[in-house]
Length: 494
Image (cartoon, rainbow, N blue to C red; front, side):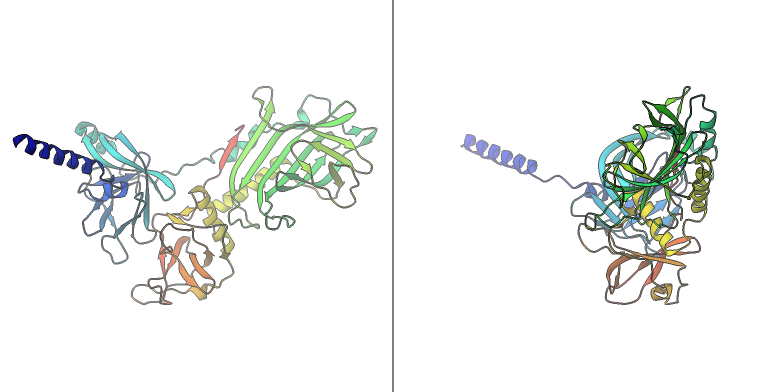
């Protein structure tokens, strides 16, 4: 009888272990919110205002969010909701996101892989997260080296600005690396089959699915400047309609030399300028990157180009290169290559082009938004750098948009019912597709749901619609989000 009872206990024990083993693993976001300890959200070295936040999650689905100066610090400034209280949080069904309804913009934390780190005497363990389009860390303190922590607090700077990764420091001095083709010790010539090729030429070509428009200037001394404007890829829906967006500009300079009875272009400098194309303002395009590549005996050959060759055709000067494909035009005959057409048009030399481009870049950095089109471009540039998000808000820059709406059509009121000042600039942009429901940041318009961004006094705003069944809207400012375009990456021989 005792043996029978023993077997019964064993069976129950096995069933208990089996049931325990079958319990589903707790989702990542619940592992964070179901704790009663502080979590620290930080990036880089957790230095500077806004780079270190302390989060405490409560059972009533609210969370305390506080900007602090160092780990385990209790005083700081709270980030509240629109009612000036602790914001509520929501967990995504996939278990990988936490949305905190602070005053705009909301905080959206996308949990990734786990991590452990020791920083300033504190050992933290938690998760890497995507926040505002960048990788941050969300961790709990597991150990404190009090000696190192006190030493850090003593030497910590009392006031330090948010560190912005700057990559444009080379801008003012980039042109000192340019090689002067006129001083190159080489045989230069403009004679081809007994005829001079000196002059200015326009041409067009293809590069993959992009249209290319070029200008080649050949001086009487055999020095050339070749400028290419590479447009964004053609639309599959309208392949015959030119895509006006400028993706890249390439300007090379060098000299011509004769070989096998033909003329070849020997580049010594290649200036490449890349532009943001999402939401691009054609009249004022934002620059993403600039690189100068040079071919010199000291620094080697850094220009990655195929050979460019000139030959006389039946009636035109012809250009041969594997870098470009033929884009035939009218009255160019049957010669399947790029035709150069003489023109009175001229272009500045490479160094002059750069000075104009760099000044344009500086002007945009100091005033990124001076029109509705600029505002759309600003949103597109920020989104391009932050996984299609602006302060955590997903945007669809390939979708519907508007830059023609008058500011008076989107007048807002504050929480007290008072009229808010009209925005100086406005743009309507389609939101990104969300996993669960319509984006809470969108506003209902006759044309559909849109994110409506505004700028007033060099500050970015988002139009909020508190009630979906009401026409009442309110402009909410973005906090700790400067109205500044991403810094361009300016490099030499990269």
